[in-house]
Image 1: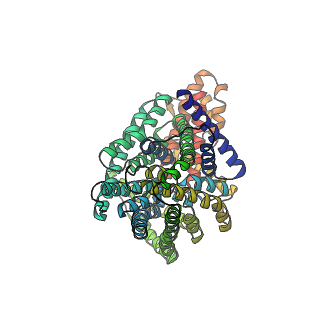
Image 2 (image 1 turned 180 degrees about the vertical axis):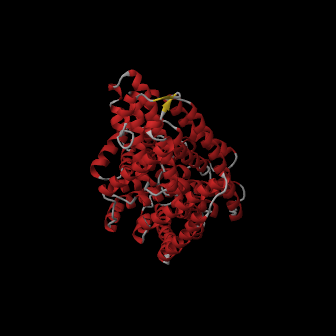
Image 3 (image 1 turned 90 degrees about the vertical axis):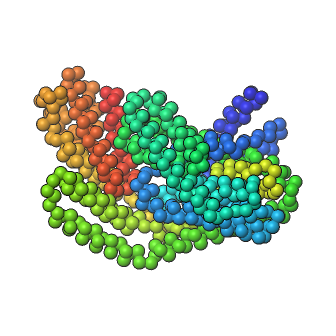
Length: 571
């Protein structure tokens, strides 16, 4: 059995790699290929029956998957799209679960309302894996990518809370309580936020104190589980706690972790995410034939087909209807609102300029107010620069693929529940159809929308402008090079002349030539360059909190500073 397991695991990894390479060369979404290959593998002679416990996916696979996505998602983008993300991932998930539950129970009376609502809960959350893979390839605007990723992170929590309530109703009275769902959801959110924040802060501080990439990577492996299991034990949302911990770790990591730790974490978690996501989609296809056999024992093919078509049609209609409200809000008076907001911000700026602080406390309050004002102005500029238009909402509506959570959550419905196999199969087939239908057609839809993208020259100009800005801020914070000291002693004139004009913007040139200098000069150069580099990182964090530039610009500049830091370390 051990040899068989090794062969299956090795074969699975080989299929994952082959599917990924084929997907990159052909443009077909990898999840579609993996599901198809899984179905094909299940019919090979001699293949064993494999059943993966849903709790393994929910507690062992989902937390690291969510953490890997959350830690890479900029908090700035989440904040700016919080309204739409909340609407899609909370309101629409709960509404979709209840509407699907009501209509499925009405048209298929043998399926109780609680079980039908459980079905609605497991098919409501979208999975952004296939959508974002397609979006990266065909040039989907970054803001739409953020909405899809943010929605897929949060909607899992909403769906699992509704599912938990529906399953409890199945086990007790078969009575579904909307009021109980609201209270349960409120506690799930509050408890998850508190636990996620605590875990994120404590682990980030611990990793900051450790200068060991192995230990830091090991701690990062534990973070999603440290957030998930305590939250679940307290009946809060474990997946939301993981998301909060991941977002906070990503935000704190930009300032508190070393470049080596960030690079190691990014590579490690990208690999883990690839293996887990690919494995779930492959298993999804492999288990499908067995699910069909189980469902046919308790119902007919016609009933299953009718149930699948009903649920699929409702999902499509509800998503388009749900996005009609943001479309209506976005089209009516948005330009006028921006003008009114700019006018209020201008008045606030004039008021702040007229203030004359008399003490340090008032100066700090004034500086805080100016920062908030700058952030508000940057938010208005962002809305005008990257608006979500009607075309963008069409793409969001069409990017309704289901995946990992639907597959895992459906199987948590208690065994022995009447019509369980029918509902589980329906959820699987709905997820499969959405992957095929939307996955194959989404590139065409995006191409038809003809989104405009930022030119390479504009991106380069933004990066250079931000580099100049943080460089000037670093000089203001640290002081001119001529005035620097090391251990109270002034710099050697040779060091000053060597570093002159290299700190900003030629920091890389200075680090590359570090080995060519004399050993006694090299120590001073390293200390001074690190001093300016730390000041530039601090300035970058301040600018990122305001958000004048795009997240991609901040990411590129941070990558540049990380590369410089690593050259210092190895010099």
